[in-house]
Image (cartoon, rainbow, N blue to C red; front, top):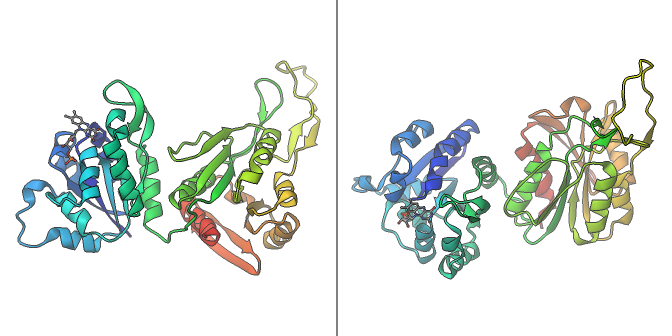
Length: 383
Ligand SMILES: Cc1cc2nc3c(=O)[nH]c(=O)nc-3n(C[C@H](O)[C@H](O)[C@H](O)COP(=O)(O)O)c2cc1C
């Protein structure tokens, strides 16, 4: 279990903290909360204490008989400031230590993430931008802010990222860290959908969960991430998200960007067959059954292997029987650096078991969450 210290600042976005604390507890993190004085106007210490199952440290408890900021800083595996106010970002950048949160941050030597939330005018102010740059240069991870509706009624950049994404990023902070700084990564994900007629599709059970975890992890590792997906996916730090539906559209989309990628990871479930001629109108019942002619879709991974120049390529292989031998030969045939092999019973399940196969490596893995499996895949790609 990892111990996460959450610092909460004065922003209306602090109302999302109870949900975040609950998510982190559900994922097995031990959560300690430090509140700033103004944050207590937006969320109560009682709510966060109940949900974290631990006493919350507030500024009025500064007169402790021991140096709590040092002991909390020593024990933490990660510190996360959420929502991070413009004021606290400024204090962090300049090393001020006048309340429990800023004192603990200044004493802490482990990984720190800040998740800002503020009106876009505060975020875009040169003072805030220069403070954030200083923090980044010191190795602080900055998640967001997001674009969207702001509490003032305006729209712009400044929204707090969603609690799920914050929790995913905290999962990434509290384990072995892949490093992909500046590396251009393409993640191709989701199950393709082939039209039969304007209302019917041939699809599969892919959830896109693993692709989403890989893409989030790659951002956390410092990569410049493009996602080509059949499923909606969002992270304020993605370079681009390209939504596609069919295998052909996925193929065109990947190939047109391939030379710009250093790494391509392809957990997509690409249908092997598409309807040769989809009907322009909804097909009616005739009482005589229906025959549909299917044709094979392009083999995207094989094509990426064939056209490979400098890219590292990670493919996925789903099948039954001797899946390891099948995946080993597919890895060589499709010129993949790594191939992840699993059987069809794993499809769409929350935890996965299988094998990570590389040059002279066959590493079995058991019952991993999407984030854990994503970490296993990204670690050997580190540069
Ligand atoms: C209603 C209201 C909402 C606020 N929302 C934000 C916000 O979203 N982000 C921010 O940086 N400051 C916001 N502020 C200003 C901060 O609360 C203020 O700068 C405070 O000093 C921050 O203190 P702290 O960093 O110690 O939490 C808000 C103030 C009020 C009154």
